[in-house]
Image (cartoon, rainbow, N blue to C red; front, side, top):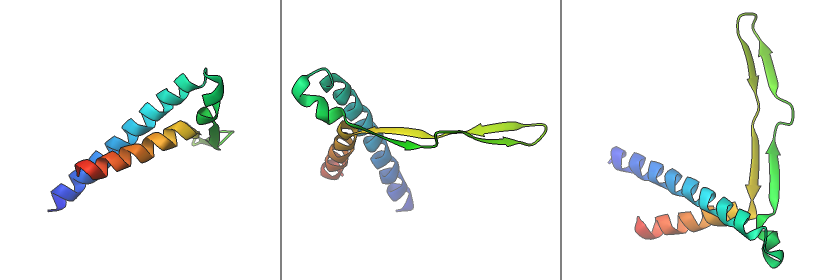
Length: 87
């Protein structure tokens, strides 16, 4: 039973990533159409300057930035709805 729940979780994550990718692609296609530019509206989240750690021997730099478009969010919602249908 636990293996099935774990598998379902990873299938859901895979579906969400696929929806994110397809939504982002559709948003890029719609950005050139004048009345569909709103679907490619982007929100920027993350660190502007990287966090740097110098340990003498190892130097680490960490930065995360997310650019989420409205089309990507709609793609993720659609992928979750499709997942619920096929589950």
